[in-house]
Structure formats: structure tokens, C-alpha cells
Image 1 (spheres, rainbow, N blue to C red):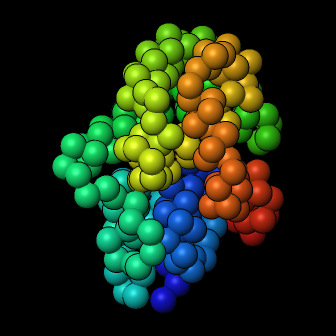
Image 2 (cartoon, one colour; image 1 turned 30 degrees about the horizontal axis):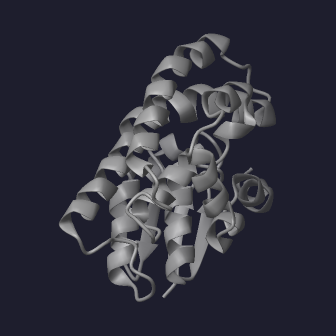
Length: 218
């Protein structure tokens, strides 16, 4: 049965769910919302904290992006996105939490939003937020680089949920002036190239999703 994803098109957290569906071969359908609609009473009945995404699957409703991608991996056949080794599971969870707690406030919101998303919607760029994000963003990228090491992906030779969560946040960063400087010479660029070659990443690219679904949310 198709997973219905209630979200604002372009959300990196929603993209995590889309990536998981694509990697598992799960059919999905987006129920797009306009910016601000996630704070309206209708959506608050789905998500009491007024965030996105929320998924609906066969009468089962679930919010919180990490819970969603873990559910998709566990509930459907297809390539496993969670490793078997406990240490690799720990590493996967570590990277996922780094993205939520440290990359989101700095790289995604501070740099990515202001340099990529804000101009699309005609929102004034907050230069102070951009500058404030540079140093914590540098720390975050350095930590991720160390965790990746010489591996192809964060838990070894195979893509895991850690890679899907990370690429949803980092995909647009090298294309910004600050991101290009922060990531110059980083091994994360090679990882991003490997991820960019995956059909799941191509099919869920932010600009592609926004072009297809954002008009429907207006």
C-alpha cells in the first residue's frame, strides 16, 4: 500500500522519508502543504508540534523523521538500510543524531536555507544567521568527515539510513559560497558524488520535488 507523506515540498526531513521509500522500492504519494499550513489546526491533529513530515500508511500515522525512516526500513522488503553489526548500528544512529541536532541548526537552517531556499521564495537573507552558522558548521563537517573515514558510506560498503539522513541535509551545501569554502578538499565531497549517482537521490532532488509539488500546495 502507498505511503502518503504530508509535508511542505522541499523539506529535508520529508526528503529523508522519500529517500527511504525510493531505496526500498516503496510507492509513495505526497500530500503537499503550503508554508505555514503545518501550523494550522488540521495539521496539528496529525502532528501536535506542528512539524513535517507526517506519514500515513494503511491507517497507521507516524511523525518524526527518524522514526519514519526506521519504520519504512523495518516494514518493507527491499535492501536493508540498517546494518546488522551493533557497532555499525551505533554509528548509524550517531550520524543521524548529528544531522538533527548540529547540522540542521547550522548548515541546513543557517547556510542552506538562507543561500538556497530564501531566494526562491523571495525571503530576505539573514546574513547574521549565515555568519553565525559557519563555525558550528565547520565543527559538524569535521566530525562527519572523521566518522566517514576511508569508507564509501557511513557504516561501510553499503548505504544506510545515516547516509539518507545526511544527504538530505548536505546535498545543497557545497553549492553555497560558505559551504564550498567549508567543504573544500573534504572527503565528504566524494561521498556526496557517490550519493548523487543514486537514483533515489536524483528522484528526490529538492528542486525537482518543489517544481512538481509546490504549485499544488499554493
